[in-house]
Image 1 (cartoon, helix red, strand yellow):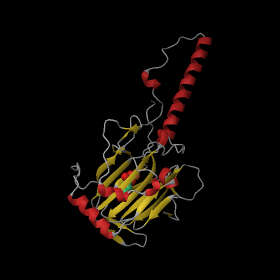
Image 2 (cartoon, helix red, strand yellow):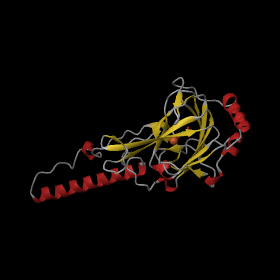
Image 3 (cartoon, helix red, strand yellow):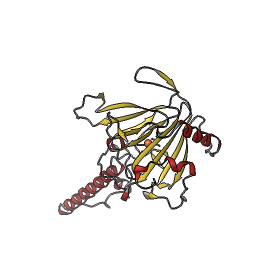
Image 4 (cartoon, rainbow, N blue to C red):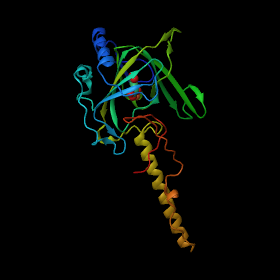
Length: 283
Ligand SMILES: O=C(O)CCC(=O)C(=O)O
Ligand SMILES: [Fe+2]
């Protein structure tokens, strides 16, 4: 696959991964043979999952949910570069006007990531937030700087998110019925399907260290903070004993929670975390 010569780096692309005739057969299957879940909100994105289900409590495969074998039509659509079959494949349907909020696919859970587009073309936004103080001349926003890049996803194209595009940029699709292209053309959206392929990361820990986007880095930071907090508490206690002060019971439950850590970890669905600056609770 060819890497696109753009920021974010690491975005690889293959146009015409399948023929229009093959695509037409798939769309027929998607529209007439598959049972889609009932939509809670009319006009929203729908998802069907194949393979294993990831458990966000244990950060491993959910043993409660049986493996769902890949259907025959899916087999020829699996990218070969992955080496082995992906552990998880997600088919999504986007009616015109549907989107997916900006997110990064959970770092610790998943390693490689590919997505095949079918039906309508759509514009996907990649965005990157540079922490305050970084030199790049980007759009200023508060103390951080945000860069946004539109990537057009034509039908039948396969995209791989690797490197920066996988780990350090968020991606999403705006909820709207039309896209405005780089040359100003307004393009109406129609029905779109995508197939996302995910390979589980060995050991379920990511080493990228990006505290904005990486759940492993965020969890480690939380544990480190708690450790420092406990150390400090111990040192204070020793000082108090030495000074002959009266001791409390070592801190209430509330105090023992991590200080200053928000934990809004929004899930797009059960297999997939929408990014937030989420910090997980200590294990
Ligand atoms: O619809 C797509 O092309 C990608 C969707 C996505 O970002 C995801 O499922 O994680
Ligand atoms: Fe994603």
